[in-house]
Length: 157
Image 1: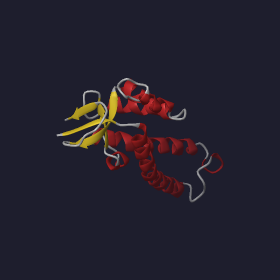
Image 2: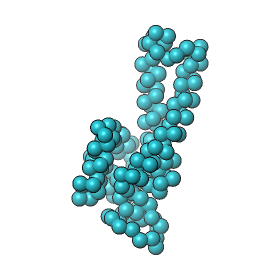
Image 3: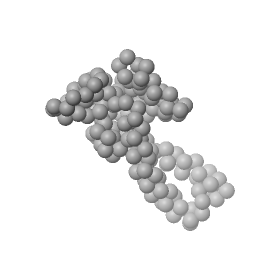
Image 4: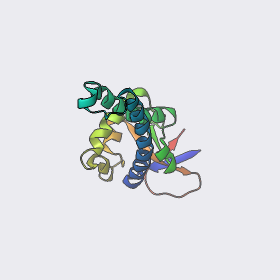
């Protein structure tokens, strides 16, 4: 059985940085495909016209898709695996599409203003960040049986 405590800001940030490197590679691949269609010209309004908006929407979809597919499949991105984190519902189950969409939208709000919504977890009595609480999810630091930890313990199926 795997159990864990709610993850702190440091681990969340480390996983986010780790994922940023992988996302940069995915976005470069996507951009390479876009450059193929513009014959190597920069994807800006002057060279791509209104297609630049399709390109930008594609960038957002790549980022959202990375998180959504990983959270739906296992609750972990590659960065979260490296830092032993998992995103689960408040009842400890894998996320559904509705929870993923809510978490992504509220996550933008929580991380955008200097990560104040994430730092909220230090003021919250249950150590939940703003987007955790609003989407009824939580990020837990996975701990193997037998290790001692401090914090709120959560059991994951």
